[in-house]
Image (cartoon, rainbow over all chains, first blue to last red; front, side, top):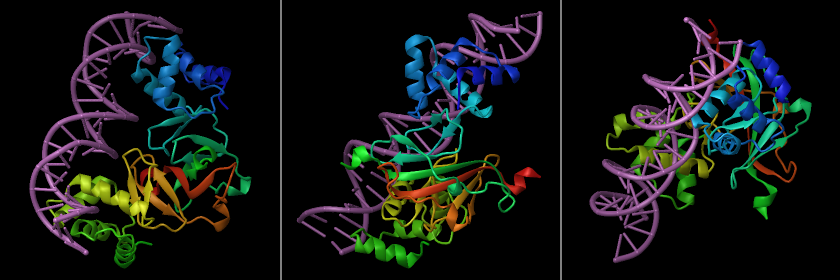
Amino acid sequence: MLTAESAQSALQRAGVRLTPQRLMIVDVLVGNRTHPTIEQIYATARQRYPTLSLATVYHTVDLLAKHGLILELRGSKDGLRCDPDTAPHAHAYCTECNAVYDIILPAAAAPDASALDGFRATRVDISLYGECQACRT
Amino acid sequence: MLTAESAQSALQRAGVRLTPQRLMIVDVLVGNRTHPTIEQIYATARQRYPTLSLATVYHTVDLLAKHGLILELRGSKDGLRCDPDTAPHAHAYCTECNAVYDIILPAAAAPDASALDGFRATRVDISLYGECQACRT
DNA sequence: GTACTTGCAAACAGTTTGCATAGGC
DNA sequence: GCCTATGCAAACTGTTTGCAAGTAC
């Protein structure tokens, strides 16, 4: 799970600069369970850092994902979403309201990712598609 | 698994017209294990139907997915991909060459999709990300 | 000082839409 | 004849890139 401290130490160790923009974006993501889109991160971070640009958000999110600090989710139709929780869990995408929920699946549900048919997987993503409770009523 | 016959009967039953364009697109997809992008379907179908438009491909793919005849895969960076095999299986995305492979997982690996936290899932998608054999060498 | 980072704008890619035409039933 | 489907172009949305200015180390 992403924390301000883990992000700082990981980035510093990798020789990446801790700029105010990056710390601000990390701050928006820490503890965030809403799986925000880039646009949402941008909007939130911009409130406290008005000159922040979208390109920087894209760069930073990419950077954080490359260092394994966050996950990039591509399951929804409205663009890339971010998940600061890198521990194994599944995602439920509501096809009505586009919300994304975390789902804790039994450990047995996670397939073994190592060397299937010569494919070396570094990440497994389990996605459920359907309707959330709010949209079904 | 999509066949020309299953597509025709399903669409006819739904009162949807069997136009040459649609049959052509179905034809491109039947037995296709390459998980083609829209663009690739367009290029292939256009060889035999030169006036076919991209918009029609998008419409038709959407139509086929809505009727449960194919799956739309959103896991890769280069846009929507189509899978004519709707039976449960996982997908392996090569982050190097963008290829998508089918992976047969043990039945136990498929999580129970019914009513998790009030979420009613109609589809489960398991995606592996990593490098394929060809790209590792 | 050097190399990395930012911000802006423009470019881009994939996707969707409006509308007139064509065609199936 | 009615209604759906097609094709084209334009619009849109999300994302990436080039480059000049700024900033951490």
